[in-house]
Amino acid sequence: TTTTTTTTTTTTTTKPRTTPKQVEPIKVPAATKPPPPPPSPKTGKAKIVCGCFGTIHKPLTNCLHCGRISCEKEGYDYCPFCSFLIEKVNIVSIPGEEFNKAVMHKERLLQFDRENASRTVVYDDQADYFQNSLCTWLTEDERNDALSKEERRRRDLHSVKKHVLNIQF
Image (tube, rainbow, N blue to C red; front, side, top):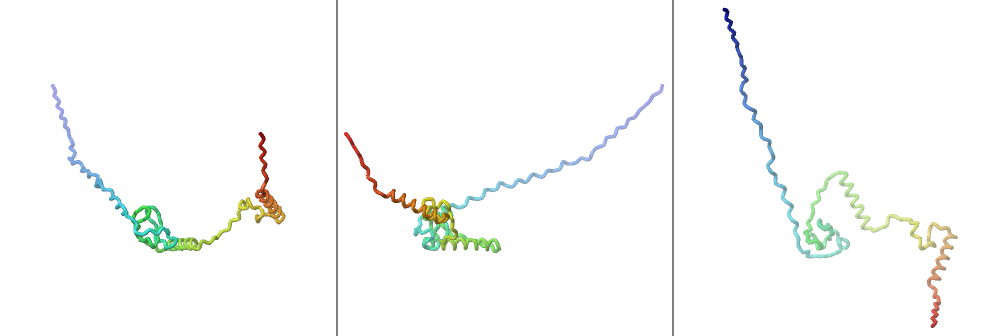
């Protein structure tokens, strides 16, 4: 009788034990508070009410709430219309070509407003609709004819006509 023996060898490989990676928590910004609302504007009663809106006295500034123009006589006080405080606004000038150009344009427009001069002439064909005799586009004969028609129409309009009312019973 023969006997056979078999030996089996099993090898197990063990992986080195690793600790799980620690995940960094996501940094969520702390709940930011919304910015506080702007302080409510001060209200009150105007001490001096001029009402010239910068036409008699030098214009000072506009009310930032209603747009009313206050003059130097009224000063930086409460607006007579909406009662909000008119404060002096500090304008920061930015040196540069664009700024200088804008200031020059503003000054030019203010100068035009001060002079009140008409700088344009409009020749309107419809402006002479009722006065054809004064039309610059008509010839001399057409003007004379239109003048005679206007005089005839005016004479007929202003003449006293007799109205006879006949009532019979």
